[in-house]
Length: 251
Image (cartoon, rainbow, N blue to C red; front, side):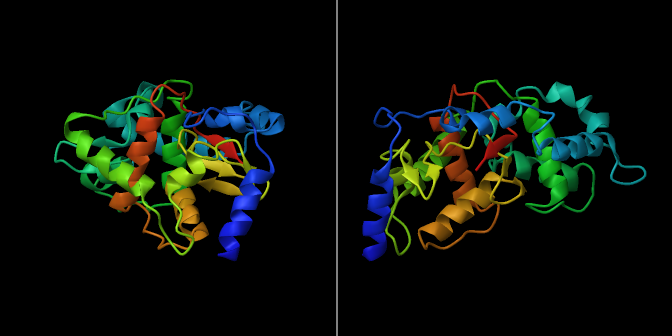
């Protein structure tokens, strides 16, 4: 109970004006210094991963197997792709960009999966996501995607953990307020993979979701778990029309 009271006081301590329920672009809540860093490739540390991802795009995993480029052409042809993920695959599976890359690697390149949160997968994801930077989020939310959006919404609205908090209690009801020095965002994942200063490295949205789960003392799900991918889709549905910021900068 004491933790809940402290949390409530911290949330109430400082606020930036925001409309109730308004979904705001994460960049609008960054400090001027962080916004400038996010917008400057020459200073943005995440560009190290972008460069690595562009190199991976051109490289075959081994002799006789195709590179990404040999199937898809130059990486600039991936413009708009990240803005459409997560998405439902032809076999009905819900995939985010990371799991789409992993499936392509194992099925088409016949190479071992990179592994979630590996430097290689983060690099390739960042390089592809960059091609959608500035484009509006455009995930599908009806048809085959509809039940997954609903699953994500239920996860978002369900109270979890020992602190008995839902995602929405922070990211709907307290957008713009401060918690331990951070400005609470609308919780959309438009900047991921992102370079977080507290991590001192690039990380995926699922790494951030696991940190949120830990923060409310709930069970941390595995990277790529269905509930997290469904939540990612719901967050993207909330963000439809907002610009992709990947790779973002976060505090």
